[in-house]
Length: 108
Figure 1 (cartoon, rainbow, N blue to C red):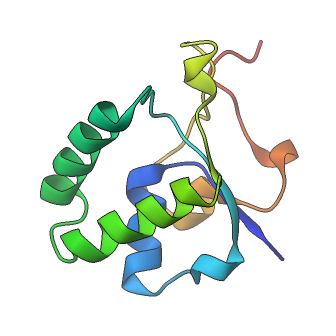
Figure 2 (cartoon, helix red, strand yellow; figure 1 turned 135 degrees about the horizontal axis):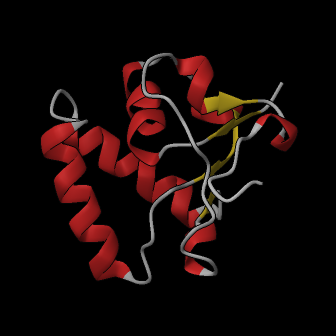
Figure 3 (tube, helix red, strand yellow; figure 1 turned 90 degrees about the vertical axis):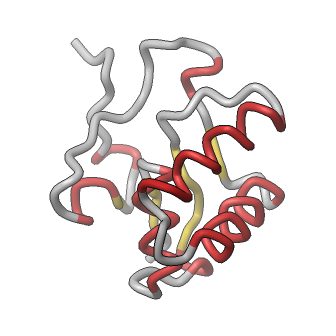
């Protein structure tokens, strides 16, 4: 079953580690708010130091592939308060199989 990732940093790390195959990923619904290449470059640099330090170049290549394939959605570009709420403790908290499983930051 295709997977939807809810965190660029954590999901790309899972793919780089081999825990999730990139072919399984239908898309990432990110909490990022990157409007252009410069924004993405800044995020990538930060994530390479913090989340992807074991595999910085591989993780960067994975993210760039996902972006190029149109698989990264950033709802915060339209509404800064609308993004998935996740826990960083378990992969089951930031990988889902359906949008119905997503808890949104602005849900009432």
